[in-house]
Length: 402
Ligand code: DP6
Image (spheres, rainbow, N blue to C red):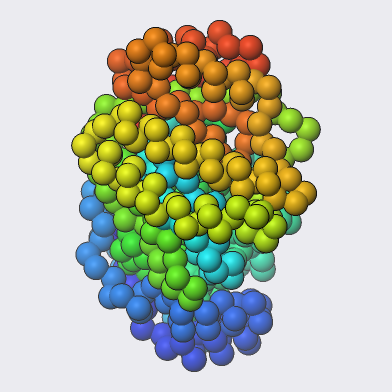
């Protein structure tokens, strides 16, 4: 990530951040975030920021511009903005369950493929004329719940940068209608990239991943293009970040998405995995078995062994859905079209096509196959009862900050 208008601002002490935050508009929340960020995560301090990550650094060269520091409550601040793009990802080794709810640490390791064509573009601008954060999502004002998660991330960035400026956030999702994929991973990855750059911080990809992961664990993986792994977190491990495994060109595979009719109510992944952890009698078995499954998936990925990866991916998928189904009250994400699409995938395999299914916290089916087989897989899914739309996604790039 390139620096934005001059200096990196990592020199403020934790005490200064906390005290500045407590006297300013951000009040107790920012002070708390300041303490948490500096004492626990403080990505800018815990690990020295390395040179700008390659991808972001390749963006337009920095304009030769003098920094414009302004004094505010003893801290130098500057109004500035940045824009970032990030893509959605699909987990092939699934994350389900947290080992530390406050720090949003996953209880199991996960591996994902970042997807092209499913992109979130986010602009963040810190501005001293703003009295409160202003958040626009897809052309509308964010709901209170959405805004709270965005402000939480902004507070962590403000705390690390030692500044109090409110921000304007404008985020747009470019997801085809048949995406059937959540935008929270790309959304928080793009927000992390734009907010950190707009605050004038120069963070490594690992630091950005830790920040995005704190808001939504799958977002930590979307910092990287191609294949990424997010290890399980130990309680208190605030700097946990995803790491890149292979780039988008490692393997010419496709993800065919079959969107099915949505059910009347949806339990979000955060709530679904917490309910599973608290009430499912098989949750512990899932957590105990996930590392071995993830190792199998990682080995198959390295060898480009689709059948090896696919079989373990299906097992990982069914195991976490079993946790959700056996929670109390139980959570059934599937619809009739889900089961019909899974049957289609089995039939394709019986006829010799290597196609393997996964689902997230919803009714849509996502099928991994070789690039050459994608049109055939898409046709078969498109002809399946209960499947309303289909699309093909290819491996995509990681976070880009401008
Ligand atoms: C089923 O990353 O959305 O898609 O960390 O609570 O925001 P939070 O959860 P989130 O969960 C994704 C769960 C999943 C599997 C996966 O992507 O690994």
